[in-house]
Image 1: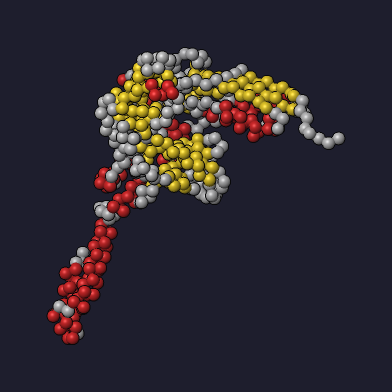
Image 2: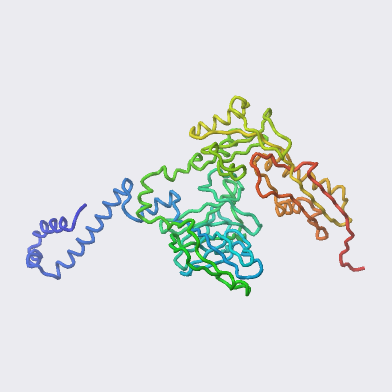
Length: 490
């Protein structure tokens, strides 16, 4: 790097060509030296910047470069909210219900949300789990049909940090988060979260016909943005209160800190990010690191009639904790000769390695070739016919039997045993989804004089090995015609 003294030495060697200026320079004339030294200072600063820029590709020195590199790696300035357990004491003579997402505040004015609804018995007490933070709902109108359309996520105006983002649209569809569009199909409603070198966070959507879903101009995208205060320190017994008093009974509920379940964490600082950026593998988005084995197997075995791949967490939600589940990947599938149980009330059978079919053995080898540290466990798939009841009333201008056949064909096409949805585990058609499907594809049900009711049996926990689909025997369709007359002349 060329310093200010280097420029002075060069100036002293050159100024001898100009005797008049040399005399003033030697005498230290401030009028001459001030301008010359200002130029030297500017050049030395520029030289330092050039020196740093030359080293940046190898050793990230400037904060702007570190933040830019963090942006490329997807390191978001995200905090983790604290979780606390409160003791709720009910002084009422009747039971008191605290609803889910009820807003509370602590002695410092920090906001908390109740995680799960509870009922505190009369003159009794109960433990209550809460998460620190608040959620702001942002409705954004899409301004143009643009590939990879982005919506800026605003910073909190109270100094709190970004914690999580959920996205939905005006059609009632929820979007899945997908890092860098990994394993994303065309038209799939997903969103990606990214950050720029100024630490401004954006939600970005897909590109029509290429990857993901591209929202149209005029669509309303709803962002539920959660903010939290990061690390929280509270003493046992610290008082809490409802943020808003809604009923007189609220004043007879005492809330106090029982235990700090999680202290939370602040967003990564610049020094921490600088260290992270030295090690690319920490943010490697390879499918193995993200546990995308479902996509891996489905990609190499596209003709499977049914495939469900799940991890230890899902397995233990269904069947409880076990040491055998540690570092395991679970698979249930059907191709041609795999065993499938018909009684959904039964537990699945674990298949030992010697009894694997050729397809199962190939799947196991494919997973182990991606990461041989996992243990691959196969379960038998189990048929489960989803009970669906549809009752429709259509104008008498339509033939009831024809409409019924149309409804049956459309439901089986979308949710039957050979449908795309049924080939995956956890197929669970919702009421709203079926309403939209039938109204969009069957003219009789879209008529202004028509009405219909959909009933789907839902379970609290859907077992991952269940091959869930709608069948002729589980689908009940009743079509009734009603007289309808429009206001007319004559």
